[in-house]
Length: 170
Image 1 (cartoon, rainbow, N blue to C red):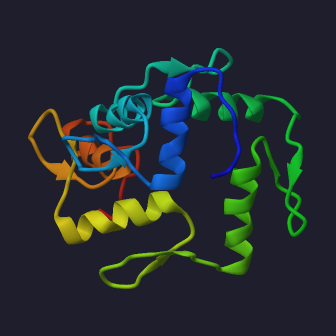
Image 2 (cartoon, helix red, strand yellow):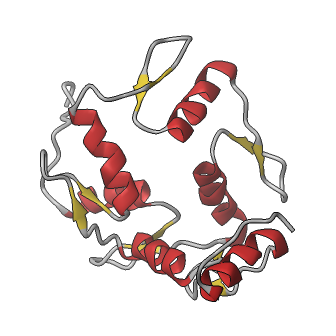
């Protein structure tokens, strides 16, 4: 098909999935499918809220090793991908491409149910949960479910006395 060669037959088998579209590894929580078992394993961490990778500079936690590596660049001046519009720098090219859409308003990722558009695939994935009713992020205190981790984190604040924003009227 494409002429790419491999030294191991297993690597060729995995590569062929690029051409066939085969994604044999399915998440039993949300139904997302993947070409490799390792990608499924990385994905499943998102459902648990676990962040096994931490930045050795600031301690920030990440579910994905690649996200942590990209974050580490925020502590240095190494941001080779620059936005021509505003000058913002990025460690990874795909982050620059996503950022550029904030200037153009482009939303190339469309919901096949309602047609809503999104600047990135992550936003589309979270949106689709509106249609499925899926709420994979569950509060360990009360069991309330949320479509994304931000909703869960915001909700968790209702179970604590830590309320830094006080009404200045009452």
